[in-house]
Length: 157
Image (cartoon, rainbow, N blue to C red):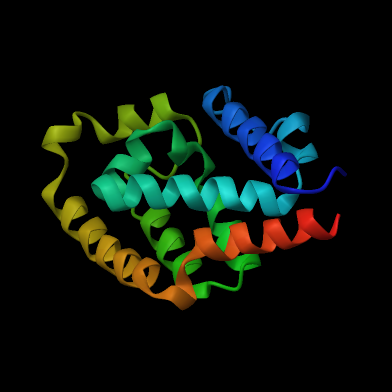
């Protein structure tokens, strides 16, 4: 493995591009799995943070980032952030008709984003609040933890 910040950013960009081109509903590709776990953790925690803090779980599950909900739970667990992992699990469990890895299947189950079932919106909003509070806490900031661990690993080589 190459070391240093450039290697980390190259792997992060590669993981990001794989996430963008993930086959709808497909399982992790060999290329995704070949990227170090800590970089995958950095990618999924960063983009879950971006979507959830921007538009809550509704946006997260509506967008392609929701394809990696299970990987995000695994990343939070691996980073020692059980509250975030449990909150993600609870949000996944609320998904109408069961969680689907594919974005199109999730959108079909949700229907129109602007007319979601209000009971679901309220339940997800409560979980949004848990995520916001945990992500604001420096000890629970998954993105910082993942990047710091990845940076240390890439600097050590």
